[in-house]
Image (cartoon, rainbow, N blue to C red; front, side, top):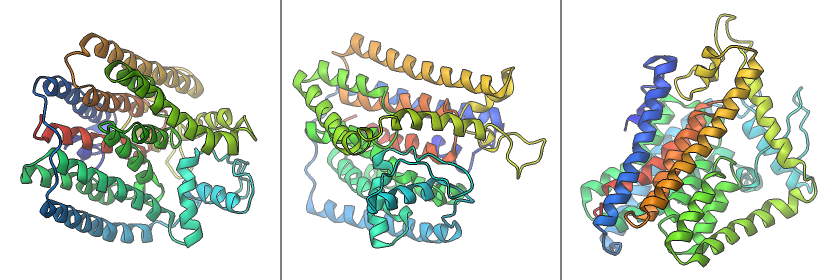
Length: 409
């Protein structure tokens, strides 16, 4: 898959400006292919999902055992080479501080100043609260993130079996997520060594699978997991709920929204926002501050170099850095405006497309493909294209490809 290749063994191969274009086109092609499938699936409506024979359930267990085992071996070596230290990255250290504060009955959203600089912990609850398990049981936070991803992959494995009868297709689809993980551990080990992005990838994979569920609770839960881990999903949510509102019983959209909103209130609002309402705005401001820092050449780089994270072959930030005139803050601000405008625009186009053709398409496939297209724009125009962030949109491609290779398509 070209998309995986462009963030692993082909990263930057075509230069700092052409490589992001190739990656974006590859990502967008998967989403547009999903839109096409939405039309084809409506015309060739598949039967009910296959019942999974006992033999294939055993195959699933074997697949998970082999995939998780091989990936765990690679991660064990990788984690040993990347110590959790604020000198290399403050992602996990900040999460650790928040977890320890909560366990000590302290308010987690307070400035951290013990590292020689001030950092405000901007992470949403489901980005750091799962690591309470790691802290209580005294094991590496990165393993908790991977375990959650393994759970998501188990659900994905079941989905593949229920939608696909061909052993060859099943094998290809089962192999794909572990191939992606192993390729990333080889060509971008830092993405796993300094971050917990596999947790976020798990959330988005679960969301992608719940789109095909009949349960309003599960669909609401899928939204909740993503909304309380990253802000990136928020513009797609109205499109998703609108699609359900127009395609099913109207109450379903309200129930799904209610599950997500209630979860946000109980997990984020009551424990944290009520006590300190400024958390949300301060968190958003923190991203701008971080972007300003990352748009400057690091002290360990040569004076003739360019900002490291902007020129690694992914994301369009390099274009705004190189081809716009004016102060750094001005160029960054233009990118932020463009990022928002592009994200809103693509949601608007998808919404209009659905309204025009809603009678001719499979609305669930359309919603999934729309998510993929939206994330392609959102992540490729992000202000700081950290390589680990792109694990999420790449993993959303996997269920799109599963739909493409299912026997009903």
